[in-house]
Length: 118
Image (cartoon, rainbow, N blue to C red; front, side, top):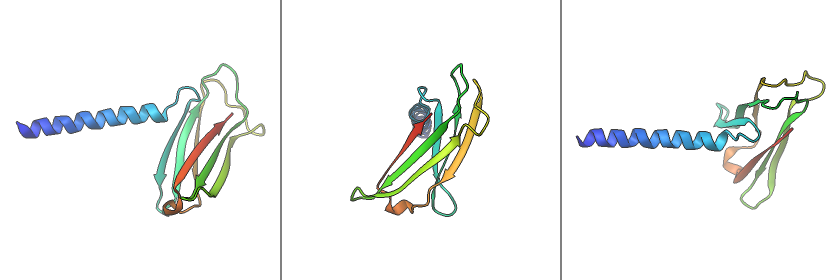
């Protein structure tokens, strides 16, 4: 009986964690979902998607990544242009998938932020 309660608690905790994480990552204001992983080369890799939920085409979408050391020094900045005016615009309802890798070694990064621009 005790094992069943522990399994039930673990399942409830896991589902709560997943729903909370989804809420944090799936910001409905900018329609962007980003997943951070460490790839086989021990580098941060970001992948995700953006959905155009507006009624007009979008012509420019970019993400800026900023990593800082423990002392607050900027280690790396990277701007990734996901969509520009040379590409076809992202039509209403369309989804844009993306992925990029950061050059910095994860051990040296103390804080990091992603900024989304459209």
